[in-house]
Every structure is written in structure tokens, then in C-alpha cells.
Length: 120
Image 1: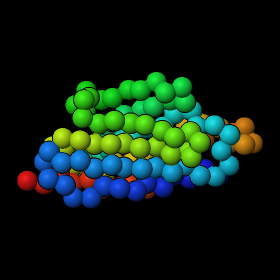
Image 2: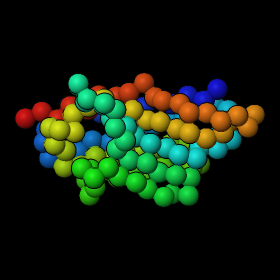
Image 3: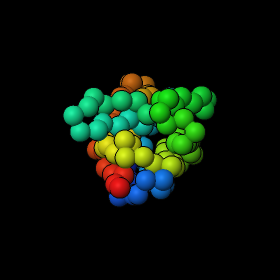
Image 4: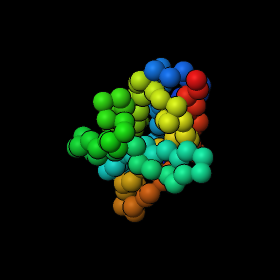
């Protein structure tokens, strides 16, 4: 079974920076896609950034130039560095992974979420 555990987040002032980490653990054969999503109060969950196993990267338009996604394949880690934060970045941030476990079954798992609050 594959599990995700996120860390980081917290309170930050506008213009500040926060880093999020996500550890993927369990019976892992591959981690094909690592995503960060976020969900603000009253809004739907949205994709923020994605990185594939061959390091192709996607960013949602509002975070381009401010957020950086990366991964450490050796440690099964994903990171999201968030700079120049704005109040509208306030949300619960979720790590998401898709891949195959050692028994060659596919998995699609989510972390528990971590709160990022950007306050004036």
C-alpha cells in the first residue's frame, strides 16, 4: 500500500515564502506523476503543479513564476516551494501521486492535506 505524508505550510504574510514536502512510502515500483492540488474554502480542488517521472512540469497560470515543484526520485520526495505568496493562495494543499506498486498494480493516492494561510 502506498501512502503520502505532507509537511510544511502554516501562516505567512503576503510576499512571504513557504515550502511543502511530500514523502511517498510503501510498496513503490514507480511514481509516474506527482501533483500538488489546493482547495480554498468554498471552492473546488484545483491542480497547482505537476511533475512527471521524466521531469516534465506543469503549473497553473496563477502560480507561474512564483511556485516551483521538484522531486527527489531517490528519496521518493516531492517539494513545492511557494514564493511571493498572495492571500488568494490561502488553501489546504494536497499532495497526489500516481504510479505502480511492486505487485504492478496501479495506485492513485492523496495526502492528508496541509494548510497554508496568507494573511494581511
